[in-house]
Length: 334
Image (cartoon, rainbow, N blue to C red; front, side, top):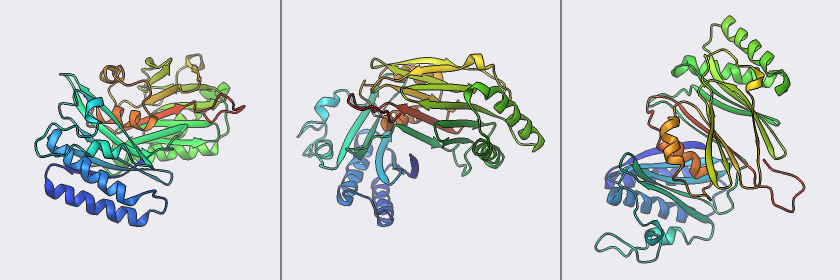
């Protein structure tokens, strides 16, 4: 899931700019279910940011060929979310109270909302996504503020996934993780020999005078995820509807821990494994994660972790692996 546009909304002129940006973007896209609805949703969400959130941001995202739309703020949150979704519900005078209700009634798109009203942190995220939107592996990366080069990297090769958080920011960090990606593609390995893989990679980085990185390597098979890695990469496991922080390994950049430090998770239907780099504050996020609804989608979950992260001055990455396998299937799509 890629962030295509990030638009700050504080006044009416920002809404017009957001609308123009969305129209221009949709002209280039081929697989959009309902362009007029997305424009309507953008206008409603932008207006709500000003009315109820003291301003915020509109994010236009893309996953494969599908467009998603999100509104994010740090306002006081919505006290009664179920009421706000009803027809006619409004907290403002001279309002018909149709915005959230209508956005949730579209044939092609579904609206999902997370809101939090705690004193120490509060805000709301609304996500518009296709009703059939399901991804067994979903990632989201947000660059360091004002930096075009991302020092984080996520990539896939067969049943293996690699999440890397390069040291520092900017072009040098990006160059390092891009080399790690090419090294990952060029080398055949298994988790049984993962120490040798990391040691060889560390040597190659030193020889090229590139920066080190903290890494998480995932081997995803039927109903199981095995993770090998090093450094400040937090792992959550959603099991029986609850999110559990299972590991945050503190390592030295460029070094590897023993293969005995591997984590294994079995994934029943609907369960998730979440990994996040250290741009996402682990302790703070545990408080937020405890507030998540049991049926939250992977897409909204990724946005929640990135939006409410307290570390502003770092690249942020989230990877969610979920089992969507139906009971009748013989095979899993994890």
